[in-house]
Image (cartoon, rainbow, N blue to C red; front, side, top):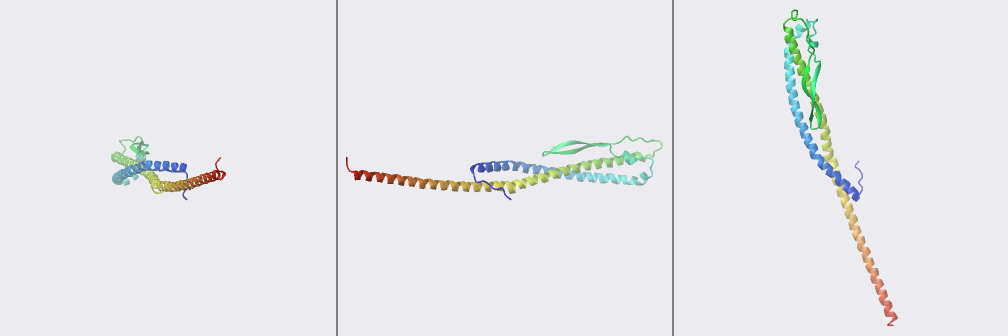
Length: 218
């Protein structure tokens, strides 16, 4: 339900001030919306590249699946699991998002004499998979944060464009009409009052003149 508007001069000023604020912030919101939309497109392109890179890395690791199961005494997958995923904060259109920097892995300790040569290559390839996976996860977090902010901005743009600005303009129109009618009525009342005053003065003057004629000269 629309807020009831008081048809007064103070309310007219309040509505004009509100309209000025809405019209001031709306272009800024639209600019932010455009920035977010462009950034989301860029992030989505990077996500597709990261997904392709991850798929390729997993394809290389697939060749090791059979031999990895035979290395029960060596936790190669554990050595390929990151200890830490390092990120940095970046601001896009006022939104703080993480950016991928690097991953760190536990130190690989195993005997070079009792371990087959392919283990080194398998561990390196598994770590590439973990690296690609971590990068993709950070990009996905970026996308979600930016998309969430974009949804909020679009809601505010729609609120201003479709509700707040039309409501303020309609309120200003109604108040102006009401104040104009009041002014017209006040002018009409003033004319009537002036007419009565002139008539009363004319009547009083006429009565005074008649009284002088009746009394005659001194």
